Amino acid sequence: MSVNYFLIKTEDLDAGLIAAWRSIQAREPCFESPYFCPEFTQAVGSVRDDVRVVVIENDAGRRASSRTSARPGGAAARSAARSPTTTA
Image (cartoon, rainbow, N blue to C red; front, top):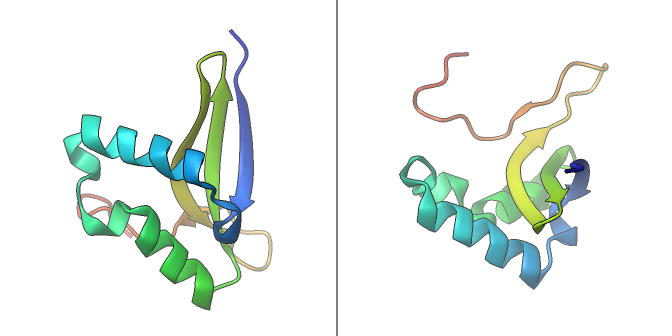
C-alpha cells in the first residue's frame, strides 16, 4: 500500500477533509479536545501564516491529520497546539 503526505494551508481544508478529521476525532478519545478541532486550526491559521495541516492519503482515501507550524529559519515543523502530555 502506498502512502502520501501533503502539507496544506488551513484555508485549503475542504468539507471532505473536515469530515475525515471529525471521523478521526470521533474514534480517538485523545483528540476530543477543542484544540484539535478543525475550527481551532482554521482560527489559528487566520492569524498565523505558518500553520499547515498534514493530509495523509492512502488506498482508503485522504485523511486530515495533525496541524503543524513551520518555523522560520528552517527549524523542524512543530505542533501548532501542543497536547497536554507533550513537553516543550
